[in-house]
Structure formats: C-alpha cells, structure tokens
Length: 458
Image (cartoon, rainbow, N blue to C red):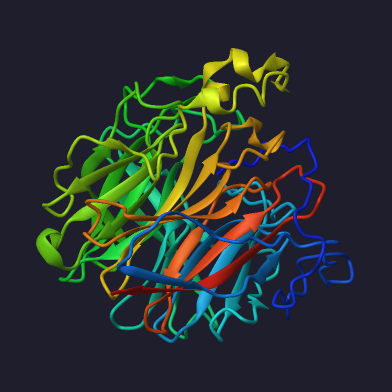
C-alpha cells in the first residue's frame, strides 16, 4: 500500500449536496477529540458508467453508503451470517510495537444489516489489531480466521513468521495473535525498503485466503528470494518483488511453499505484487486458480490447473481498451506538471498509468467479478486526478475468466487511492463494493464508502 503520495490539487467536486443515503452510526473514536467524526462539507456522488456491455448480465447498483469516515484503501471480508467487515487506514499513527506494523492506524467497522449501518469494532487498549490486507476467511466449521499482512524473519533460515487471529462469534470478538510459520526457500527478508524508502524487513501476505475442497488453504505472499535485486526506478532502494503461493493443511498455523506464481525483473516498475487469487468451481475450468497482480504499470494475470504447482506465463490484461501505456492521450494535459522537481512528461515511468490492487471473486451464481483501480498517470494522478480514465473499475466474466465481456467505471476523474474490495453477500446474486475518496495529502476530505450490486446472468 502507498502511504507517502500527496495530492496537491483540490478536486472540483461534482456534487455539493450530501446524499441522503450516506449515513454513519456508531463510529466513535475515529474522528475529532470529541470522539465523533466531523462530516466533510460535501460527499462526492458517483454514477457508474458501462464501458463494455454484456447482454446476458443485468446489474443493479444500490445507493452509496458511508462506511468509514477518514478511511482509505479498504479491505473486506463477508461472513455466512451476513456480516460485512471492512478495514481502512485512518489519519493517525498506530501504537508503537516491536514487530513491524503499518505506518497508519487501521480502523475496523462492521455492518450486520447488509451495509446500511456500520459500527466501529473496538480494539484492546494499546493494541493495533490485525491488518486483514493479509487475508481473511470463514472456515467450514464457522471459524473466521485472519492473517496479519506482515511476515517477518523466523529463527531458522528460510522461515517466515506471521500472526493469525480467530473469531468464533461472527467477529463480535477476536482472539489472537497466534504465531504461525511459513517455509520460504531462499528467502531474503532484507532485500528491500518499502515504497517510501523506509526499512522493510518483512514480506507481505495479500488479499485472499482460499479453501480447497479437502479443507487445505491457499494464500499468496509477495516478496523476495535470493537474487531478486532489481531496483524500482522511482525508488531504487525498493526492489522488484515476486509472487509466491503457500498451502496449509492445519487451518493456517503452518504454510508450505508451493510455487513461484510469477517473477520477471523486466516487468513493470515494481515486478509482481499485490496478488489476488480465485478458484473456479464449475465449467470447463473447474478447479483452475486465477491470479491477478499489480506490476506498477499494466495488470497481469496467470492461471494454474494443478492447484498452483505450475503456472502459465503471466500476460497483461487490458479491460475495455483501458491501456495505461497510451500516454499520448494525456501527455498534453500533464505537459507542465512536475513531480519531485521533474516534468512528468520527461520521465516515462511517471507518465505511464498504473493498474493497482486487483480484487477477484467467483460468485455463487458462477459470475467472475474483478475490481481494480486505474491511475492516470501512476503518481501524478494526485496532482491532477481529472483524466476520465483515472478511477475505480469492475469487470465481469461469464466464461470463468477467458473473456471479460462487461466493464463498468465506478468512479472517474476524482481523487482516490484507487483501492477497492469486493465480497459476496448473504443475499442471492449480491456483492458489496467498498472504495474510497481522497488521498493521504488531500485537503478536501477523505472517507471509505460503498454500495451493493446485484449481478444476475440471463
């Protein structure tokens, strides 16, 4: 997750009226000294736009709802009982601790009525809680498990240590942390800084835990093995990452290395990172694993048909013609824009766009849904966010990922971090989408909001 970029241009808001459907309840502790959030002067209203239409699909968007005032970069998990748990970064520092921790405090809110009302989940005094960017899942016995995103060096070579949390009561309470271990061959925990140039002696669990039919669990880490030493052009102390797959046979307490999903020092500005995996349950690709990954430029995808032991060569994905390398379309708009003292148009990796932090799920009705953010350009989008491609997107597949025949732009030309989260709801044919407005240095307000989406195939 990026935490250092700042927006220096105030967005001309497209709406100055509060939406009647945007409500907040029970969110004490996230705002001013009074403990109550001070609502921003205006809330941006987004109207989804269909870029590529699939006649066999029918989409119905619900009203936007405020989820977490001041929150950025949401992650989410849903439960069988119908609860939605969302986390996002808050504009305050976390409690200091010996183990590496995220540089912003993480707030957790829960809805038990389908996303209409949200309540803050309290933490123990002095506790930062779990950052579910590392993934969360409800097991077949009803237990909810969550992995803290950071994996740190263990006592033995090639060993990583993570933290596991559990809930037996639908996240009314959370127990943990419990130390868990990862076997990571040729691990190099000391290879790289983070994207702000800070020390980063850790790898990152990211986004998704999957359960296989036999009860084994799969998850992904992005990080480094010995020899992964290619610098990122915009932050040379940060080295390009690879994506790795791990498997657990004891409910997440120990994880064995399965394979490298993708590695290529020539790809993108960041290598392969921020992965998400999904498993196809039906059709000609039943059992297939799909992994989508960020690279700092185009979004890439690879698939495995043997439970992750081997993977096809990763390929770039372009949805509805949104190609982040088409810089001639926005070069004129950014002709005089500078970042770090340099004209953006003079630095190729600055002018190129980026697709970030994909999410991916197979709905119970078989529709495959992808969510992702597009930054135009990759970092100067926070100086001037108004290029229409800049925003948040949803894509839909009716053939289990072979093609993406419907694409919707959810937000456009506004200040956002471009991070999204999607989760299937208890209600038939429904998912919940969370996304944000604002960014780390933006002065016009920041918050996480979301909406329901009904997805029916004809």
